[in-house]
Length: 72
Image (cartoon, rainbow, N blue to C red; front, side, top):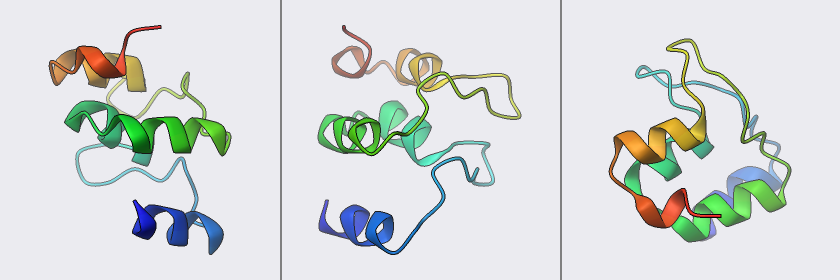
């Protein structure tokens, strides 16, 4: 978590996609890192951002089987 905070504080771009088209929020959602999801959203990560694969963070959470990250 501290690494994520450090990256955000140094200006990391939240819509950058990795080689699997996952943004930081999409990746945290897919892997079930709820604290990171909450942090990124509190720092204004766009939960409605659609990546190159046509998926949002919510869709990534569902695809990863991470119900804790897609409940309201």
